[in-house]
Image 1: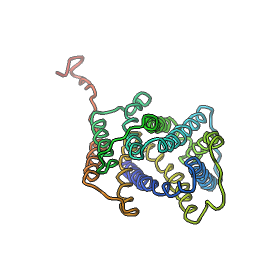
Image 2 (image 1 turned 90 degrees about the horizontal axis):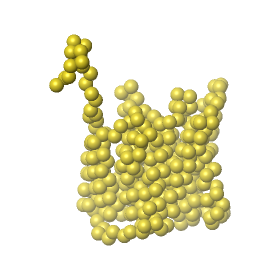
Image 3 (image 1 turned 45 degrees about the vertical axis):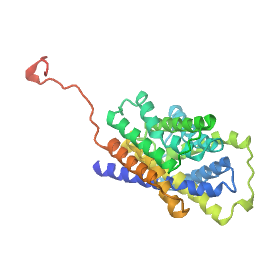
Image 4 (image 1 turned 120 degrees about the vertical axis):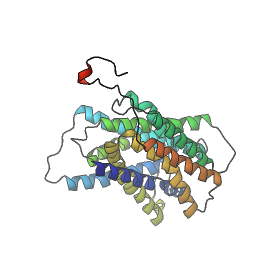
Length: 314
């Protein structure tokens, strides 16, 4: 079991290493595609990839029938984890500053920590977890500011960015409600993508959704494949697997590493500067992760020994 948990931690970390680089691909693609176009293409490619792999690995096996309850969970996960999180984040980017969105979106683990205990009694929140998440959130803010002293506020855009973290928190909770003993991670991730695409179609129909072959240059095509098959299909499967093994809180904590990975990726590939403030933010994130991922101490009432009858332990 320890090996399974160690591998799950490694999988969560690898997932974040990929997700932390996706902003560069998206930044390049935005010169040719709208945000909704990128999302539809990305998750459609991801769905096709998952469908092919799931079909190939299911040969000779009896197809698992889904109940209405489980189907509703898949649909809710697609609505919150794909549409609500990604779409609100992209809309927020058109209304407020990217630094604001980066800071607000990266507090998704903290949002999850406050909401999840209402629905997941098996994962109580500990004081050390909250302290660790708060310290990591401060580190995220320092990284996103990266030496800038300008603080700009756009209420509508900032509200959408904050709302997107609520979508991810609900998605994380729903993952724990899915019957993973009956459904493989490939199957339910594929179903989540299907409903995510379905719920995105109304937004695509009411926006400027117009694709042309000239948009699919070799560079754009490679980046879209990376986002669709890598950052979406493979990473959602690996993330969902980590949540199943580690739980919502321990897995969500890795999200704090996203801006750290993005910072150094941008420095290496785009030549963006790294300031002392950003380095300090990195240290805070690592300290916060150490606290939140460490052994949690929970109070439990001590049962009296048999020889003590009903006497108090004090």
